[in-house]
Image (tube, rainbow, N blue to C red; front, side):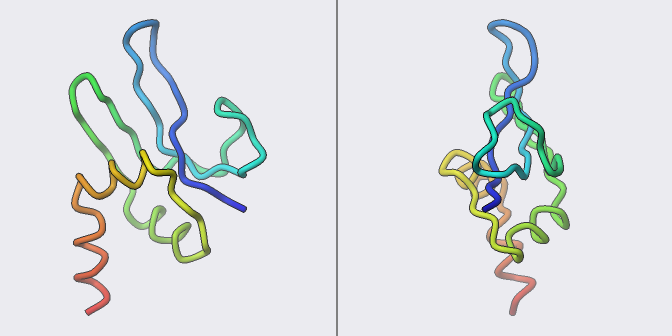
Amino acid sequence: MVKLRLKRCGRKQQAVYRIVAIDVRSRREGRDLRKVGFYDPIKNQTCLNVPAILYFLEKGAQPTRTVYDILRKAGFFKEKEGTLS
């Protein structure tokens, strides 16, 4: 099973996160299938690769709660609902 989850990067006390598609059995810093976004909680910046995220969600990937909240705040699910109508 594939999940969309955060992978920690950056320096001590200055964490930034990559949003990655990764196998459930892999550890947090393990090998990812694909990088699909970027999140910086300090600067509150988000960069998303929407086609890649849609691809993995259509294939059955489940976002973690944190990634789901990031996507929701970025308006991802509003865009998705608009494209389906």
